[in-house]
Length: 116
Image 1 (cartoon, helix red, strand yellow):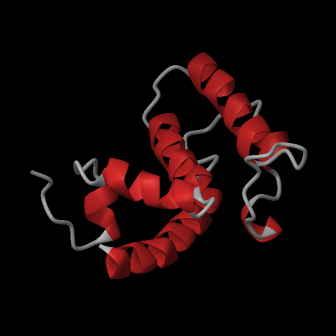
Image 2 (cartoon, one colour):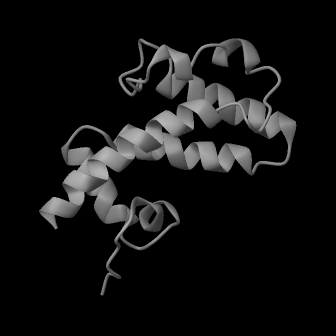
Image 3 (cartoon, one colour):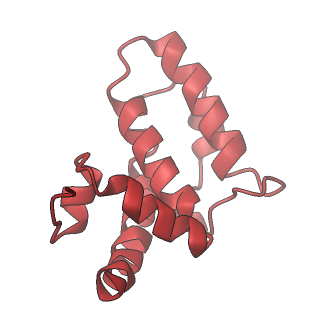
């Protein structure tokens, strides 16, 4: 039995319903926002700088390279400077863009809750 969720924070904290929300997002062509948000969390909690550099480069190519089919539709104000800052791989690198993804997820979550 899936535990009912009442907030997006429940889903993002790893609640069993996260996979249900992901399925909803996939049906609505928005799964990349959740995938990015989860990877950004992993990035922030990765201790080794070399590991963050590899993960950060992968994230940039997947979600911010305009030729990528998974490129996020996020305002440039949240993504400016990412490519330049990749070499430093600071834990806060994706904070602004993660916040923008969160806003999109929160909006999608409202639609999700109306459908369940």
